[in-house]
Length: 230
Image 1 (cartoon, helix red, strand yellow):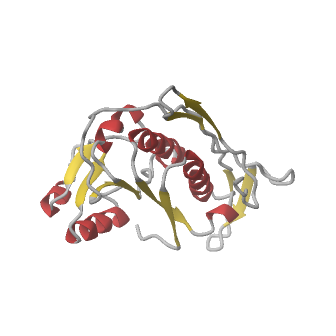
Image 2 (cartoon, one colour):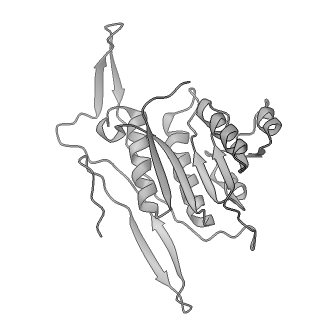
Image 3 (cartoon, helix red, strand yellow):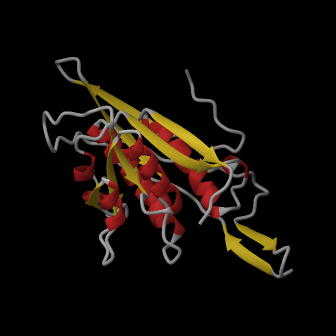
C-alpha cells in the first residue's frame, strides 16, 4: 500500500531490497525527507513578537538526509530481554521522569548520555546503567544498543548548538543504527501539530523525523506532546 503523503508534501525515501541464495533479505536504504513547500511559501519567515512588538526574521529549516543501513553485529548471540530499554535524553526534564518510572516498574534501564565533566551520577544512584555516546558522533552509537529491545528517544540539543545537530542529524544516525542493530521498538517524542508549522524550525525537524522514522521500516511509536517543561 502506498504511503499517503501529508497535506504538506514531502519527497519519500526509496528502499532497495537484495535477496541472497538463502532467501534472506538485507536492506540498504537511501532515506531522505525534504519538505516541498508551495511556490508562495517564503524561505525566510518573518514574525512579530506579541510581547515586545519587535519583528524578527528566521530562516526556514530544510531537512534532508541520506545514508546506508548496513548489517551490524557487534555481539552475536547477545540475549535481548523485552524489559531492556535505552533512554536517550535521560538527563532532561522528561527523560529522567521516564527513567524513574521505568525503574519503578522493573525495567532494565540503560541511559545514553554524552561524556561530560559532571556525570549523571543520579541515574546510577537510581539503579540505571549509564553509557556514554554522542548523537553527533554516529560511530559512538552502535555499542550502546547491544542487548537493547526498545529505544525511548526524548533527546534534544543544547541551546548553544545548531538545532539540526542533534534533533535532525543525530536522530537520523540513531534511527539508522537502531534499524541495523535490529531494535524491536523505537519510541519517539514529537510535538503536537508539528506538520502544520514548517516555519518553526524545531516543529519542522520533528515532522521530518517522524516521516524518516516511518520510512525506515523500524517498528515505532510516535507520541506528539502538547507541551514541555524545561
